[in-house]
Length: 51
Image (cartoon, rainbow, N blue to C red; front, side, top):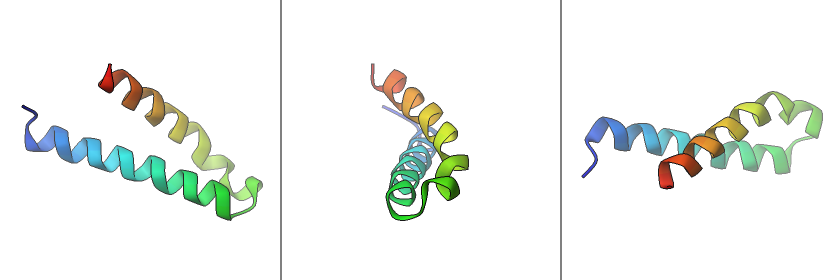
């Protein structure tokens, strides 16, 4: 069972990845570029967390 701090951190990471994906789809790519590297790092972290 995960503790509440770990669950809160996981929810924040998931929220950031989802919002970064939405922003990347809605705004021009040059405006979304600063979010993409951090979103990719968080995606890798989520993948490693799940496995």
